[in-house]
Length: 295
Image (tube, rainbow, N blue to C red; front, side):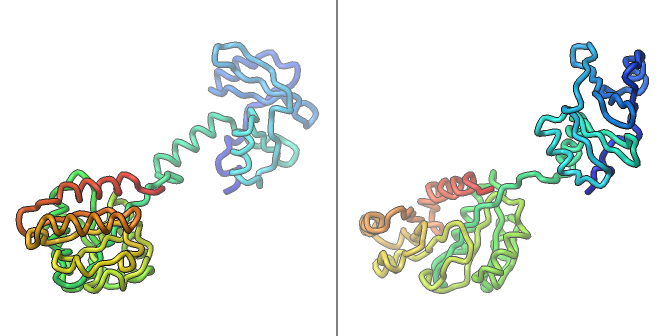
């Protein structure tokens, strides 16, 4: 974009001996009037906030031609220039002031241009068939209704199920286990705060990082004894489902050992299919992920 597209064309100008500057300003409703003599800029009259007129020297004005990049003109105003005066064929053709800069910024903000958008937190749930990922998601969504959460389903067996039952936005993306597929899905749900990805059925340790913020391993309590720090490499959280089908002490002992051996691992034991025990702590942790969105 060139400066001629945003400048105020045909500015009011006066000579060095003019004595009716205030009247001209009032009539034209402007606060900046260039002083031009002999085809050159010799000063700039400005109306101050408290009323008096002040004459500034030409060094306070950035001079250019109509082909100047608009961005460069705006940068000059930000850097301290009182105005940008545009010359064309030896005569003032336009002017840009800080008031114009504010107007441009306001219009851009109103249209959402340049607005910093927060990236949704992407949490991917991986685990074998029968681990309870779908049930976990449905019960979880009921507890985090105040968060704008969306579901990406890469698990063909559960396609559409979570979104339909929980009333959440859901997107079926069979390629969510690949970086390109997940990127595509996240782009379609970019206005969400939190995106929960239900991955394909399969061992969680066979699913590497594809661009999610956090990978969550979902395993039933019966398989807890099979876990090891090596199998949890890259996993940020572990959710043990069907915790009501095992001894609470055995489950907690196993999780304590894994937390000790896996630095930074968050663990949750839930019984989402039975009495929703443990879902409160898990849901609060997800809320924390949503509120730590990246820009």
